[in-house]
Image 1 (cartoon, rainbow, N blue to C red):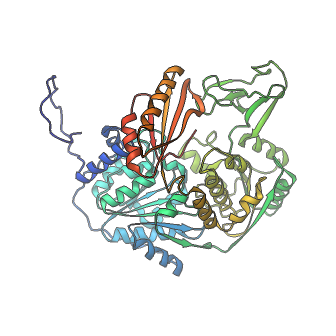
Image 2: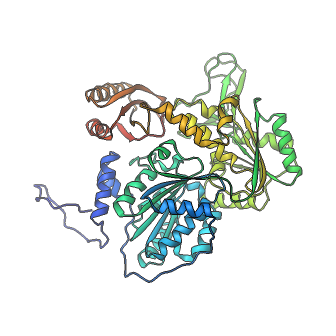
Image 3: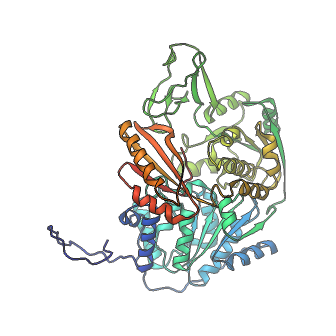
Length: 568
């Protein structure tokens, strides 16, 4: 990619073989430069994110969508259209999707294009069917699992003007749609919009920057919006549900599949209704622990406990994927008294099958669902009522529309609440409400919450806005959205070299008067895949000092993460 002309260097240069006709215009060069500077990566790395389109002669286009909005939805749409960036804060089932569809129609009829971002796991047949039923072949679905040929076909369709709405996961943002008029970011609170590799961009934040640069409006949508987005952007509160529904919440302070939970599941099965069971942990159990010395069986390459997978008769590390046989004796003290800790999806599935042998029960997690095809098949089977009980992880919460589910069971929510992270409360409450929202989409629904923190969760079950207001008060002057954070991760196979670099980076950051070092030391997970890990966490009331610190601290063993969402 050529970005500027310079004097010919002294070293030998090869001749150019071929000149590509596709090119970045000045606006996209500005966007590339921003990604490079803000997310601390080379401009070539930011350019590699994009898929270029060569626009051809514009064709006439019009569409008509048979969607009638309620007065409240019309008001929400008018509000969104009056702001360059806005947040649609709508309860689960309140009809956010209908508002998106109506705005897409108006955008296309105005001769412009649209990008519709969703968390990858939300790219279900339901959403694809809804989009294609309204917009036909003018819609394309884009995600990491589609083939290179399919990608080429989609890019050609955009170039020719036949494709005008691109729906997809965060990578869809980097397709250079000509005449872009609207970007919708659904489930904007979802952490999967944050890239875990360089460039460590956040697709929601980048969508807002790109919208401003390209002259496109941006709409964020969620039933449980992030505290930061609620504070930063004008929002419209859309209450209630599109279908008539009622919800009952039941708290259970016991552990495992208690009598309360089993009774509620029996009630649903007897009524020919369906059940979803949320468990935050995969495998049968999260840990294997010695009863005598208390030690967990750890991965030899990572500072984490190995997860117990009985179907494989093995322990597996969920970080580096190392696998070993289940030990009969404790590796530390050689005692034979071993016990399991933190029940997982596979064990809940096993126990439910023992309690309900006539029911069809399936698992819904990343051990089971490894492709878009498997995801589509499992959701279709559930919606066709070929499955009575679906046991899964956070994948269950991702915007799926289960009309026959009248019971949602939430296990292990307290483990999320106790994470050492300033967003632990937000994540726990948001996830709880998202899971609860899958029950009683039409008619009556029940939610069983297994938690010893009834007093904390109960006030927010019908009022997430109250939670946001209270959490903002707790964060004031300490955490985003009132301050900015940057995390510098140092990893090296040589522990002494990693420690030396930690001291060097820490001293470098402390020299900046507008940057506060709020933590420096061993990472919560001290070793992954044989590399020792240390972190420096920085805080500032302005972005610029953090970016200056990032430029000074860049090195081969340092990974810069601005606006981090993961602190492990």
